Length: 587
Image (cartoon, rainbow, N blue to C red; front, side, top):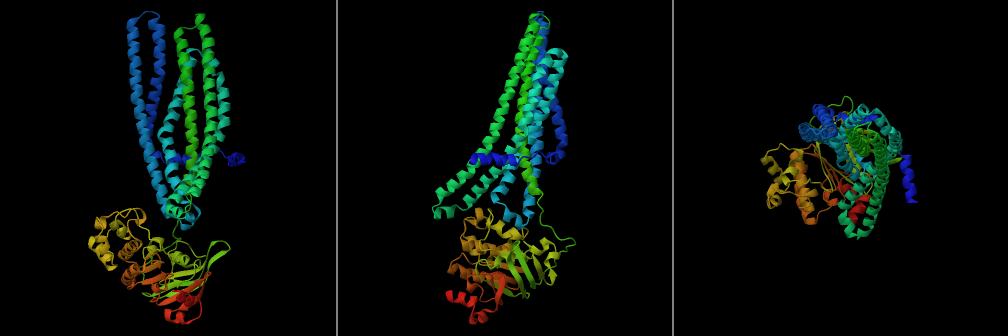
């Protein structure tokens, strides 16, 4: 049943090659067209020297060996060796130049793809698995690299070789040549039959490879959870299913290609048989010299070799075009853009206002409903509420990771939808529950928001949030590599590094999203001390489950099911019946 479903899906996805994809792909090669032109000229030279070899042997047989002319024979043998030396030089040159052009083109494409991914909205990443995105940047671009670096060489070189063989064969003996070419209609029919089927198969191969990468990335990222729940066998089975689908997709593509390639071999054997039968009869009757028969036998073998090569290149071309379609789909996804006429946001004082803000991730599923509040400059607003209440969504809207479905968000009285994204986000710092540190040094992570900050300023920021002591105790101090996601550091240390990073960036608005959720009580005391420095003179929004984190806030709002159900100070809310007092009673 699975096999039948697989085949029907492949046929349903049938679609012709899009010439626009091919033109767009070649556009990445055009800046290096000088190298490509020289490479094509060298391809022509390589094809000419390849063709010259058999013709020189034919001349040696008919005009030197047959007449016992040793001087002529020596000359022809020397020319034969020279053509092979020239063939080696021209083949090396064209392959090297095409590799340079291909590597440069893929470098540009991969850089553009990565840069574009950095600017795509959060909604794109909500829909796409990380592993699939990685597959676009790695596997798919590599398929294009193989096609540009080697495939174009074969297409041009083999086409020139085929054309040369046809011209020489017709010139030498047009009757024998035409008889040999009687197999070509069968080849055209076979190529047409397999063409679209191979393309559809390789489109599915790219999809399944992306699924494998997505599963692998998720499994590696979640290995601790997997082992803690002893889910190794179940995860292995899940990966095996995805891997088997990838295997089936590849096997269908290979099966199609494996049918076509031997068919070309059979046609080659048929062409050779025709030459031996008809040409051999001509030699027996002394109608053509034996050198001509040798020439035809050599050229027939060479004639079907480039056809076999072209069929393999076509196979790679199908895979490359399928990969290009996936890549261009990403590049065509609309990135985050400033609104028309957007202006830079001046240095903020820190006045925040949410005015009747509503938001939905999907139509009909409202996450925030008519949210309105104001935070005065330099004041702290705490947001509490049950999981799923919309607390993090509120922060995402403030940073314009998403746009409100309705309502307005204003900073210093300016609607955030009317300002440039960079000027907005550069004045807001976020410290998340799961602090993200990059695989680099402590120094690089602290300087992330302000790379040009001097050493003294960086150290001053670390000292201010009580991070300098533990950083200095690390093996290489600030130059210690924290490893992936900062795994060398404890949760509290990662949080303090994040605080130092935020303080150094000197934001006007600070957002703490469950910033102390994963630390012990002792570490929380250190973090609370660091927070006093970090919050000083800044407008802040703190999201927390631990009420000890929000007690000192100037105002607290309680969210539930996307609505504000309570608001006030800690003292006020602790006396009122409701969710906040219930939370307080549980601590």
